[in-house]
Amino acid sequence: MRTYFLRERSACALIAMLVGLILCQPLMAQLAPETGEDPPAVEQNVPVEAGNAGEVEVPEEEAPGLDTGDNAWMLTSSALVLFMTAPGLAMFYSGLVRKKNVLGVMMQCLFLMGLMTVVWSLWGYTLCFGGSNPYFGDLEFLFMNNVQPAWDADLGEPVTPMHGTIPEYTFMLFQGMFFIITPALICGAFAERMKFSAMAVFSILWGTLVYCPLCHWVWDGGILAYGGADSLAGGALDFAGGTVVHISSGISALVCAMFVGKRLGFGHDDMRPHNLTYTTLGAAMLWVGWFGFNAGSAGAANGLASNAFAVTHFSAAAGAVAWSLMEWILRGKPSVLGCASGAVAGLVCITPAAGFVLPMPALVMGAAAGIVCYYSCAVLKQSMGYDDSLDAFGVHGVGGTLGAVLTGVFASRNVCGDLTGGEPIGLYEGGGVTLLIGQIVAVLVTIAFSVVATVILLKLIDVVIGLRVTQESEIRGLDISEHGEEGYIFS
Image: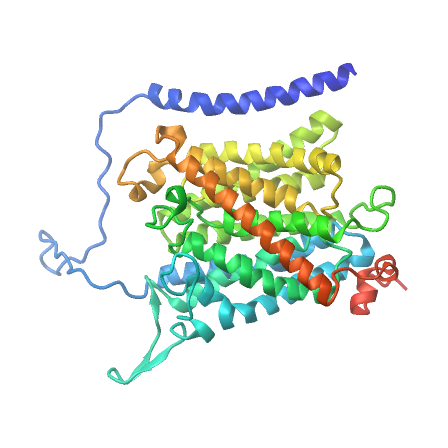
């Protein structure tokens, strides 16, 4: 009892240290000595006429065209985000299930890379980014119209539509990778027991009817976009998918886990992860891929991308350390699974804030995610009794919600002052509670919409084709019953 009491006190001390860091940072900034020197002038890359170095020729402003650096970065980021689904998520999830279901989980991730790409190319992209209606997208980009090159009779050559300094192609591809990974995250909640056919139909319907509206509301000037004319409570900041990706998938995952029911033998059979080496490698791949996920959301190879890259890394690091420390203090040993889960929790938490916060708050957010998500997976799930097989809700739903709310606390004009005309924006720097209220409203709208839509979709699919495999199939394992293959053959 005395040992447990000391561990609890140590955990409280850790949390108090984090709170102290938050409170002391403004004081430290005030105490920092001022040099009184003007910042060094930035050397401008402007052309100089040969033989007349004393005069600088200022180029005339031109309409923005293709920036090869921006395009290269965004294509790289697109590849990194796709890399997160497979092999990243495929390995992370497959290592956590029993060996009789390892191929089933990998197949879900790989198949969704194909299935959701087809949906995205046909109608998904236009429902997300077509038109200017605040509630739903139109058919502007249906079947890749206005995205693919088209013949210009006046110019006598094909013309590729542009999205700022990058082709519309590139923007479409980058956003499509988010459309792929989001339903794949949900698969962790019903792993080892849902029919493959039901998973495929659910992913199509959920992507079309849940993801697309949310994406349009947040990232295409809809009712949850920050500062929009039709925005609820002034809208919310979501840099790379706190609401669109993580809260929506995490909440839907919880609904799926409860609706489908527990795995056979849950609570008394041995359901330990069969291969934590897979999970560890998968977590590392997710960490690397997340740089494309967040820094790529800057839309260009610029300073904002650098900020997003830095805070993403810092938050992941703090999350890994915080979760490990919680286990070390409360259980006596830090686990590899805990460290991997903490890193992912930190990555999830910083996602909505990556383009709005500075590095020190990112450390605090990552540590908070490690602690809160550890509690949700180790305590909340057990007390509520639901079977979220791979903790999709505990990490993505809880971590995404925490990140969205803390964005309203830590958002800084030092990063996103262009959104506010230089005025403070987050609660932490004196911007008031306006943004925080907008963040909370966006979270509540996302949760309510995801719950209602997911329940309706699951009920419909259950009636038409059924959601769950038979008891015999579940006992044999989904590798054999659903795919006719085995992950491991040692003879």
